[in-house]
Length: 334
Image 1 (cartoon, rainbow, N blue to C red):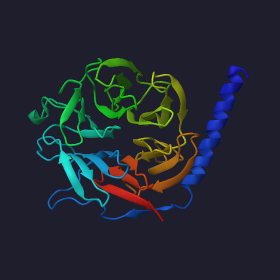
Image 2 (image 1 turned 90 degrees about the horizontal axis):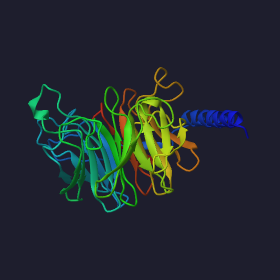
Image 3 (image 1 turned 45 degrees about the horizontal axis):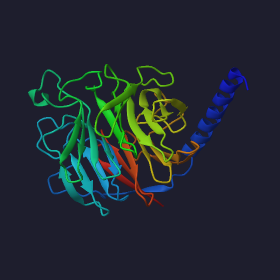
Protein backbone atom coordinates (compact mmCIF):
# COMPACT_ATOMS: atom_id res chain seq x y z
CA UNK A 1 0.00 0.00 0.00
CA UNK A 2 1.39 3.42 -0.91
CA UNK A 3 2.01 5.98 1.82
CA UNK A 4 -0.79 8.19 0.48
CA UNK A 5 -3.29 5.32 0.49
CA UNK A 6 -2.13 4.31 3.97
CA UNK A 7 -2.77 7.83 5.28
CA UNK A 8 -6.24 7.89 3.67
CA UNK A 9 -7.02 4.47 5.15
CA UNK A 10 -5.86 5.55 8.62
CA UNK A 11 -8.03 8.67 8.56
CA UNK A 12 -11.00 6.63 7.34
CA UNK A 13 -10.62 4.15 10.20
CA UNK A 14 -10.20 6.94 12.77
CA UNK A 15 -13.26 8.71 11.40
CA UNK A 16 -15.33 5.55 11.63
CA UNK A 17 -14.23 4.94 15.21
CA UNK A 18 -15.13 8.50 16.20
CA UNK A 19 -18.59 8.16 14.64
CA UNK A 20 -19.19 4.89 16.51
CA UNK A 21 -17.97 6.51 19.72
CA UNK A 22 -20.43 9.37 19.35
CA UNK A 23 -23.21 6.80 19.00
CA UNK A 24 -22.15 5.41 22.38
CA UNK A 25 -22.43 8.90 23.91
CA UNK A 26 -26.07 9.07 22.87
CA UNK A 27 -26.97 5.73 24.45
CA UNK A 28 -28.50 5.18 27.88
CA UNK A 29 -26.06 5.55 30.77
CA UNK A 30 -25.62 2.17 32.48
CA UNK A 31 -24.07 3.69 35.62
CA UNK A 32 -25.63 5.38 38.62
CA UNK A 33 -24.08 7.75 41.15
CA UNK A 34 -23.51 6.67 44.74
CA UNK A 35 -24.24 9.73 46.85
CA UNK A 36 -22.16 10.66 49.91
CA UNK A 37 -19.78 7.71 49.50
CA UNK A 38 -16.60 9.47 50.63
CA UNK A 39 -16.64 10.34 54.33
CA UNK A 40 -14.40 12.92 56.01
CA UNK A 41 -14.00 14.00 59.64
CA UNK A 42 -16.31 16.77 60.79
CA UNK A 43 -15.11 20.15 59.59
CA UNK A 44 -12.94 18.70 56.82
CA UNK A 45 -14.08 19.08 53.22
CA UNK A 46 -12.77 18.05 49.83
CA UNK A 47 -11.08 20.77 47.84
CA UNK A 48 -10.52 21.09 44.13
CA UNK A 49 -9.25 17.67 43.02
CA UNK A 50 -7.52 16.58 39.83
CA UNK A 51 -5.74 13.51 41.20
CA UNK A 52 -7.45 10.21 42.00
CA UNK A 53 -6.22 6.62 41.68
CA UNK A 54 -6.54 3.10 43.07
CA UNK A 55 -4.29 1.43 45.62
CA UNK A 56 -2.33 -1.68 44.68
CA UNK A 57 -4.98 -3.70 46.57
CA UNK A 58 -7.30 -2.85 43.68
CA UNK A 59 -10.01 -1.39 45.92
CA UNK A 60 -8.86 1.46 48.17
CA UNK A 61 -8.94 4.95 46.67
CA UNK A 62 -6.16 7.55 46.88
CA UNK A 63 -6.94 11.23 46.33
CA UNK A 64 -4.67 14.25 45.96
CA UNK A 65 -6.89 17.25 46.72
CA UNK A 66 -6.21 20.93 47.27
CA UNK A 67 -6.55 21.23 51.02
CA UNK A 68 -10.29 21.90 51.05
CA UNK A 69 -9.82 24.89 48.75
CA UNK A 70 -8.50 25.83 45.29
CA UNK A 71 -4.89 25.29 46.36
CA UNK A 72 -2.81 24.47 49.44
CA UNK A 73 -1.05 27.82 49.81
CA UNK A 74 -0.70 28.67 53.51
CA UNK A 75 -2.64 25.57 54.58
CA UNK A 76 -1.67 22.97 57.18
CA UNK A 77 -4.21 20.43 55.88
CA UNK A 78 -2.91 17.08 54.60
CA UNK A 79 -3.93 16.75 50.90
CA UNK A 80 -2.97 13.11 50.22
CA UNK A 81 -5.91 10.98 51.34
CA UNK A 82 -6.61 7.25 51.37
CA UNK A 83 -10.16 5.88 51.60
CA UNK A 84 -11.05 2.26 52.34
CA UNK A 85 -13.69 0.18 50.57
CA UNK A 86 -16.46 1.77 52.62
CA UNK A 87 -15.40 5.29 51.65
CA UNK A 88 -13.95 6.06 55.08
CA UNK A 89 -10.77 8.12 55.36
CA UNK A 90 -8.05 5.89 56.80
CA UNK A 91 -4.86 7.81 56.09
CA UNK A 92 -3.66 11.32 55.24
CA UNK A 93 -0.29 13.03 54.90
CA UNK A 94 1.64 15.75 53.04
CA UNK A 95 0.57 18.81 55.04
CA UNK A 96 2.46 22.03 54.29
CA UNK A 97 4.37 20.60 51.32
CA UNK A 98 2.43 21.68 48.23
CA UNK A 99 1.19 24.67 46.27
CA UNK A 100 -1.31 23.14 43.84
CA UNK A 101 -1.76 19.36 44.06
CA UNK A 102 -2.33 17.76 40.68
CA UNK A 103 -1.47 14.21 39.60
CA UNK A 104 -1.29 11.05 41.72
CA UNK A 105 -0.12 7.50 40.96
CA UNK A 106 0.43 4.36 43.05
CA UNK A 107 3.17 2.01 41.85
CA UNK A 108 3.32 -1.78 42.12
CA UNK A 109 5.02 -1.57 45.51
CA UNK A 110 2.29 0.65 46.92
CA UNK A 111 4.36 3.83 46.92
CA UNK A 112 2.45 7.05 46.25
CA UNK A 113 3.69 9.51 43.61
CA UNK A 114 2.33 13.05 43.23
CA UNK A 115 2.98 16.19 41.20
CA UNK A 116 2.84 19.75 42.48
CA UNK A 117 1.57 21.74 39.51
CA UNK A 118 2.44 25.32 40.41
CA UNK A 119 5.08 27.34 42.25
CA UNK A 120 5.90 30.91 43.33
CA UNK A 121 3.93 33.70 41.68
CA UNK A 122 5.96 36.68 42.87
CA UNK A 123 3.09 37.82 45.07
CA UNK A 124 2.27 35.36 47.83
CA UNK A 125 5.29 34.52 50.04
CA UNK A 126 3.57 31.31 51.14
CA UNK A 127 4.33 29.90 47.69
CA UNK A 128 8.06 30.49 47.92
CA UNK A 129 10.32 27.46 48.04
CA UNK A 130 7.58 25.08 46.91
CA UNK A 131 6.10 23.72 43.71
CA UNK A 132 7.09 22.38 40.27
CA UNK A 133 8.12 19.05 41.78
CA UNK A 134 7.36 15.33 41.80
CA UNK A 135 7.39 13.37 45.07
CA UNK A 136 7.55 9.68 45.92
CA UNK A 137 6.08 8.65 49.28
CA UNK A 138 6.00 5.35 51.07
CA UNK A 139 2.45 4.07 51.72
CA UNK A 140 2.73 5.60 55.20
CA UNK A 141 3.81 9.04 54.00
CA UNK A 142 7.60 9.01 54.23
CA UNK A 143 9.29 10.98 51.45
CA UNK A 144 11.45 8.56 49.46
CA UNK A 145 12.37 10.66 46.42
CA UNK A 146 11.99 14.18 45.11
CA UNK A 147 12.42 15.23 41.48
CA UNK A 148 12.63 18.84 40.34
CA UNK A 149 13.85 21.89 42.23
CA UNK A 150 11.53 23.39 44.81
CA UNK A 151 9.89 26.57 43.58
CA UNK A 152 11.95 26.74 40.38
CA UNK A 153 10.28 26.45 36.98
CA UNK A 154 12.46 25.36 34.07
CA UNK A 155 12.86 23.15 31.04
CA UNK A 156 16.05 21.28 31.92
CA UNK A 157 16.14 17.63 33.03
CA UNK A 158 16.44 18.87 36.61
CA UNK A 159 13.53 21.31 36.54
CA UNK A 160 9.85 21.14 35.64
CA UNK A 161 7.26 23.76 34.79
CA UNK A 162 3.80 22.78 36.04
CA UNK A 163 4.14 18.97 35.99
CA UNK A 164 0.69 17.43 35.56
CA UNK A 165 1.11 13.68 35.90
CA UNK A 166 3.51 10.92 36.92
CA UNK A 167 3.53 7.18 36.19
CA UNK A 168 5.88 4.34 37.12
CA UNK A 169 6.34 1.45 34.67
CA UNK A 170 6.52 -2.17 35.88
CA UNK A 171 10.33 -2.05 35.67
CA UNK A 172 10.45 1.06 37.85
CA UNK A 173 11.14 3.66 35.16
CA UNK A 174 9.44 6.98 35.91
CA UNK A 175 7.47 9.01 33.36
CA UNK A 176 6.42 12.61 33.98
CA UNK A 177 4.01 14.69 31.90
CA UNK A 178 5.42 18.19 32.27
CA UNK A 179 3.29 21.18 31.39
CA UNK A 180 -0.15 22.66 31.90
CA UNK A 181 -0.62 24.94 28.91
CA UNK A 182 0.24 28.61 28.58
CA UNK A 183 3.96 29.27 28.84
CA UNK A 184 4.70 26.04 30.68
CA UNK A 185 6.42 23.00 29.15
CA UNK A 186 4.91 20.49 26.74
CA UNK A 187 6.95 17.31 27.11
CA UNK A 188 7.31 13.88 28.65
CA UNK A 189 10.39 12.97 30.68
CA UNK A 190 11.73 9.52 31.52
CA UNK A 191 13.85 8.71 34.57
CA UNK A 192 15.31 5.48 35.91
CA UNK A 193 13.86 3.93 39.05
CA UNK A 194 16.53 5.68 41.12
CA UNK A 195 15.69 9.08 39.64
CA UNK A 196 18.41 9.43 37.00
CA UNK A 197 17.39 11.28 33.87
CA UNK A 198 17.12 9.09 30.76
CA UNK A 199 15.42 11.14 28.06
CA UNK A 200 12.70 13.60 27.15
CA UNK A 201 10.48 14.14 24.12
CA UNK A 202 7.84 16.54 22.93
CA UNK A 203 7.33 20.23 22.30
CA UNK A 204 4.41 22.60 21.92
CA UNK A 205 2.41 21.69 18.83
CA UNK A 206 -0.22 19.44 17.31
CA UNK A 207 1.87 16.98 15.32
CA UNK A 208 2.80 13.42 16.32
CA UNK A 209 4.89 13.56 19.49
CA UNK A 210 3.97 17.20 20.12
CA UNK A 211 1.74 18.34 22.97
CA UNK A 212 -0.60 21.06 24.10
CA UNK A 213 -1.07 20.39 27.82
CA UNK A 214 0.06 16.79 28.45
CA UNK A 215 -2.37 16.36 31.32
CA UNK A 216 -2.54 12.64 32.13
CA UNK A 217 -0.62 9.36 31.83
CA UNK A 218 -1.58 5.68 31.76
CA UNK A 219 0.03 2.41 30.66
CA UNK A 220 -1.57 -0.72 29.24
CA UNK A 221 -0.59 -4.37 29.73
CA UNK A 222 1.64 -4.20 26.63
CA UNK A 223 3.68 -1.42 28.21
CA UNK A 224 2.44 1.27 25.85
CA UNK A 225 2.39 4.77 27.34
CA UNK A 226 -0.86 6.70 26.88
CA UNK A 227 -0.53 10.49 27.14
CA UNK A 228 -3.65 12.63 27.57
CA UNK A 229 -2.84 15.50 25.20
CA UNK A 230 -5.73 17.63 26.39
CA UNK A 231 -5.18 20.79 24.38
CA UNK A 232 -5.20 18.73 21.20
CA UNK A 233 -8.26 16.69 22.26
CA UNK A 234 -6.50 13.37 21.83
CA UNK A 235 -4.64 10.50 23.41
CA UNK A 236 -1.16 9.90 22.02
CA UNK A 237 0.30 6.41 22.41
CA UNK A 238 4.06 5.80 22.61
CA UNK A 239 6.44 3.00 23.36
CA UNK A 240 8.59 3.49 26.44
CA UNK A 241 11.41 5.00 24.39
CA UNK A 242 9.14 7.79 23.19
CA UNK A 243 8.41 6.38 19.73
CA UNK A 244 5.03 7.62 18.52
CA UNK A 245 2.65 4.75 17.76
CA UNK A 246 -0.78 6.28 17.17
CA UNK A 247 -3.34 8.83 18.31
CA UNK A 248 -6.94 8.36 19.43
CA UNK A 249 -9.54 11.11 19.40
CA UNK A 250 -12.63 8.96 19.88
CA UNK A 251 -12.58 9.07 23.69
CA UNK A 252 -12.84 12.84 23.95
CA UNK A 253 -10.68 15.58 25.42
CA UNK A 254 -8.54 13.94 28.15
CA UNK A 255 -8.10 15.52 31.55
CA UNK A 256 -7.76 12.17 33.32
CA UNK A 257 -6.75 8.69 32.16
CA UNK A 258 -6.84 5.30 33.86
CA UNK A 259 -6.25 1.79 32.50
CA UNK A 260 -7.28 -1.13 34.68
CA UNK A 261 -5.91 -4.68 34.88
CA UNK A 262 -8.18 -5.79 32.05
CA UNK A 263 -6.99 -3.04 29.70
CA UNK A 264 -10.21 -1.12 30.08
CA UNK A 265 -9.50 2.54 29.41
CA UNK A 266 -11.27 5.34 31.29
CA UNK A 267 -11.06 8.98 30.19
CA UNK A 268 -12.36 11.96 32.14
CA UNK A 269 -13.38 14.88 29.93
CA UNK A 270 -14.36 18.10 31.66
CA UNK A 271 -13.99 20.53 28.76
CA UNK A 272 -15.71 19.20 25.64
CA UNK A 273 -18.67 21.15 24.30
CA UNK A 274 -19.99 22.43 20.99
CA UNK A 275 -17.18 24.99 20.75
CA UNK A 276 -14.11 23.34 22.26
CA UNK A 277 -14.52 19.76 20.99
CA UNK A 278 -17.67 19.45 18.85
CA UNK A 279 -19.42 16.10 18.95
CA UNK A 280 -18.27 15.23 22.48
CA UNK A 281 -19.62 15.89 25.96
CA UNK A 282 -18.31 16.27 29.48
CA UNK A 283 -18.13 13.00 31.35
CA UNK A 284 -16.24 9.71 31.53
CA UNK A 285 -15.71 7.64 28.39
CA UNK A 286 -15.01 3.92 28.86
CA UNK A 287 -13.59 1.51 26.31
CA UNK A 288 -10.75 -0.76 25.30
CA UNK A 289 -7.08 0.15 25.47
CA UNK A 290 -6.48 -2.73 23.06
CA UNK A 291 -8.49 -1.62 20.04
CA UNK A 292 -9.73 1.86 20.97
CA UNK A 293 -13.41 1.02 20.90
CA UNK A 294 -15.57 3.16 23.20
CA UNK A 295 -18.26 1.07 24.88
CA UNK A 296 -19.84 3.25 27.57
CA UNK A 297 -20.19 6.85 28.68
CA UNK A 298 -21.05 8.38 32.05
CA UNK A 299 -22.34 11.94 31.57
CA UNK A 300 -21.08 14.46 34.07
CA UNK A 301 -23.86 14.71 36.69
CA UNK A 302 -23.23 18.44 36.93
CA UNK A 303 -23.82 20.32 33.64
CA UNK A 304 -21.19 22.83 34.72
CA UNK A 305 -18.96 20.12 36.17
CA UNK A 306 -15.22 19.83 35.99
CA UNK A 307 -14.47 16.14 36.42
CA UNK A 308 -10.71 15.94 35.79
CA UNK A 309 -9.67 12.70 37.45
CA UNK A 310 -10.85 9.13 36.96
CA UNK A 311 -10.07 5.67 38.34
CA UNK A 312 -11.75 2.27 38.58
CA UNK A 313 -11.45 -0.55 41.11
CA UNK A 314 -11.25 -4.31 40.50
CA UNK A 315 -15.04 -4.61 40.68
CA UNK A 316 -15.53 -2.09 37.89
CA UNK A 317 -16.74 0.73 40.11
CA UNK A 318 -15.71 4.08 38.68
CA UNK A 319 -14.50 7.13 40.61
CA UNK A 320 -14.31 10.73 39.45
CA UNK A 321 -12.69 13.80 41.00
CA UNK A 322 -13.80 17.36 40.35
CA UNK A 323 -11.81 20.58 40.38
CA UNK A 324 -14.45 23.29 40.13
CA UNK A 325 -17.10 21.24 41.89
CA UNK A 326 -14.83 20.32 44.81
CA UNK A 327 -16.25 16.83 45.07
CA UNK A 328 -15.54 13.14 44.62
CA UNK A 329 -17.93 10.81 42.79
CA UNK A 330 -18.50 7.07 42.77
CA UNK A 331 -20.38 5.34 39.96
CA UNK A 332 -21.66 1.76 39.94
CA UNK A 333 -23.42 -0.22 37.25
CA UNK A 334 -27.21 -0.20 37.49
